[in-house]
Image 1 (cartoon, one colour):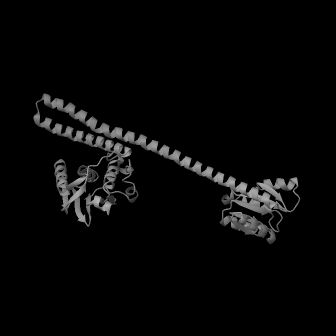
Image 2 (cartoon, rainbow, N blue to C red):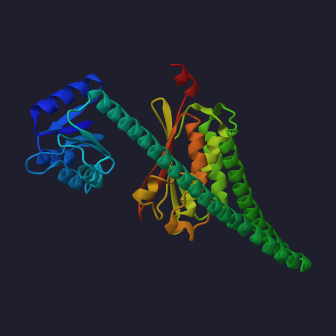
Image 3 (cartoon, rainbow, N blue to C red):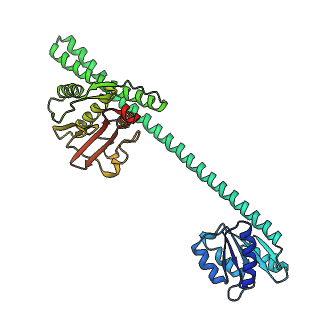
Amino acid sequence: MILIVDDAPENIISLKIVLEKNGFEVDTASSGDEALKKILKKSYVLIILDVQMPGMDGFEVAEAISGYSKAKETAIIFLSAASANVNLITRGYISGGLDYISKPVDMNILLLKVKTFYRIYEQSRALNEMQKKLLEEIEFRKEAERKKDEFISIASHELKTPMTSIKGYIQLLERSVDKNDIATVKARLQKVQNQVEKLNLLVADLLDISKIESGKLKFNKKYFNFNEILDHIIEIMQQANPDVKFIRKGEINTEIFGDEMRVEQVIINFITNAIKYAPDSNEVHITSEQRGNEIYFSVRDFGIGIAKDHQLRIFDKFYRVEETSERFQGLGIGLYICQEIIERHQGSIGINSVPGEGSEFYFTIPLHPEMDAKS
């Protein structure tokens, strides 16, 4: 938008008509005070400013405008009926003007100057936008690099932990074998097996994240019995965690369509997390039920819970709650993988949690997603 500032109405009218005929949006002010009030409220690309005005002259208006952050990129063209002597022109440029035109105004020349300033403004805005995007991209590279370094550090630590345990148990096993202490050998072999399973899960997660990134995470969908895989998972979890009481609510009395192994992976992740993040509780609630044309599944623990701000990011890749990262191990990719699996089943995933009272992780999956997609 262009602002014309002139105390003579006839000058304003003639300039306004010419500029509007050439496609420019125009605003007007009949005094320096009125112009300053408008500049505080609106942004202008160009101000055409008369020098000789009662009250504040054009130079004083320009000097006042230079202090406004809103108008720091606004171009000013001075118009003056006085002879264009060196002193006036010099003062015009010192006051912040970019051009100086003597009256009577040659409209063709003025139009050329206005178009030039507009072109410069558009180019400047485009350059600023490019610079902004470039800076954002650089910051995104820096953040990605930081996350990569942090992930490598965490992954190295998480992989090293079970490896160190396995090495230690094997050394103890050697001593037990030498003593022919079969009972101790069996107990320590079980501990080695537990650490190998942890290592296996970590490697599986790393492979899955790689497949997600490359778009190669495969799904083999077919109809399967949800209750049967849930029974099987709970049985295994009960054997591995005899002190935990699993309270099951509801059941799914129909087959569902999906990748059985991947859905099982999500369920195991939910239950494992419920046990892991509720070390002082021995109770886990598992709910499964049919709701209309979809199934609902949730796992509820009574552990530390998750604050609201963390709940918004808990499914982000590599996200770990800082307050618990030292106390509880993990790569920060399990829930991200779960989200990918559920979304690939046309379902949704979420969390309900209160700090200090526990968390409930849940997902929903359509019973017949291939039919929903066709309808």
